[in-house]
Image 1 (tube, rainbow, N blue to C red):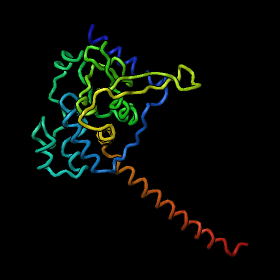
Image 2 (tube, one colour):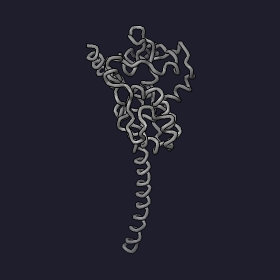
Image 3 (tube, one colour):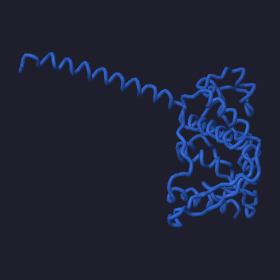
Image 4 (cartoon, helix red, strand yellow):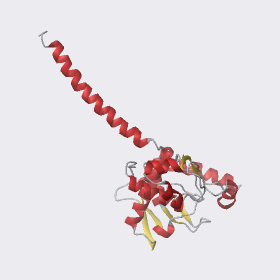
Length: 242
């Protein structure tokens, strides 16, 4: 029953913001920003990889794309394997995940593509205290979630207030968060931390994205040059016609 309830909660909450509008915080990934991706990889491995895998991404691919030498990769980012060619897998077994959380923590390889970068960014920013929950927290983007707020020591504890703006319809009420207990990071520092983590998840969802975007710019440049040459050639062919 516990597992069934967790699954139903996730299915219901997944559509909550699909019908209610855009996530409250907007984010656009910059997968060409290597320093941000390197910090995001560090953040992910330190706070997320214990429960969540990235089974479609290999350590050596991440190291190559992010400019991380193998020795630094092994020393700082490889906690579940000593083989650079291995996929990034969590040390938590699905059985233990179900036992502790009611449902096995999902693989996050494609989360940024499936839900959107703004959704991931908003999710990490909208945990709030909820005494009615077993784990003491809830989330605006995924109500009734089983996951604890693993970043609470960084963000601190916030409470959710709901109320409508002046002249706004009640159904358009906007959430407001109040920080009641400070974390080790300031709100600005925590947002930067989350931005790097979200940026990394956007990269992990499509490691070839940077190459694809770079190739797209080259193709567009080639087409513009070709257009100019074609126009000049057309003028040359038709100059004696008129």
